[in-house]
Length: 338
Image (tube, rainbow, N blue to C red):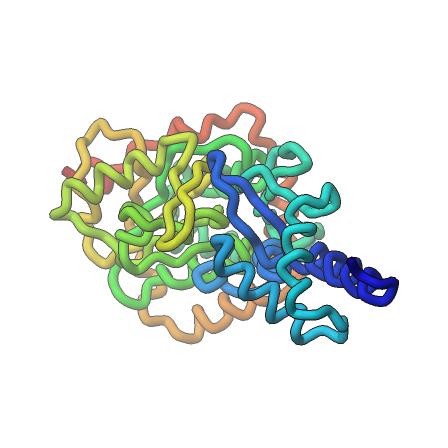
């Protein structure tokens, strides 16, 4: 039996564990979470490539809990630590998540929703440098391409719950602006833009990086000769759900709202059929190829709060009521892919 002082310390230990840790179920399997890690994933400012949710098995979380109590000023005896952990597991006050989600649609209260929207507040203003980049450089002054690209981006902001099932693909030589497009997307969605340099990160077995990614940007991570890779990618582009697997972690399933983009140097970027409707392929204009002064000004505009806020304002208020994101223009560049 615990005396009054021991009971007070015991209760303080359980309260500390409740504050620091949580439980989560994945398909009837219980795992454990460090709530600091949960906050880091949901609210932190680190790169999603580097920060992931880390579920622990019971044996591992007990070690963390013991260290947590040892580093606290709670005077609980070692023989009572195990009892405190058991009490924490049984307590109705312990946070218990029912799986994870990455959803712009509200989920049930006990689901751990990792969704994060755009970080830029829309404010009306001048965004001409970005408009020129989209229209002249990326779209090659082709109005049909430009209008689709612009509305595709507006769709990503206005209707995140509607998966487009279309991948935007740009190709062009060195110094034409491929990396700048990545910078633009990352400026708007800094916490949910995933940069991919190895396609296996997305199409391979272990794809934990996809769990909290909205914008998936392939940077030269392209294999025109791999039929398995392109077929797996096609499924990722269209499927409404995604299986998440990570080493030493329980597998789980999430709804997929991902937007896929890719840039490449080679004009032949994918082995696809001419009637494949999952790709919107454009050649980037070389009008500003290796034009360092132009891209320096453009990157400054993208970083300028007024310009990027004005662009997001335009995307937020652009009328897309009659826009069908799946009806993309068929480009001559697309017909070349086979």
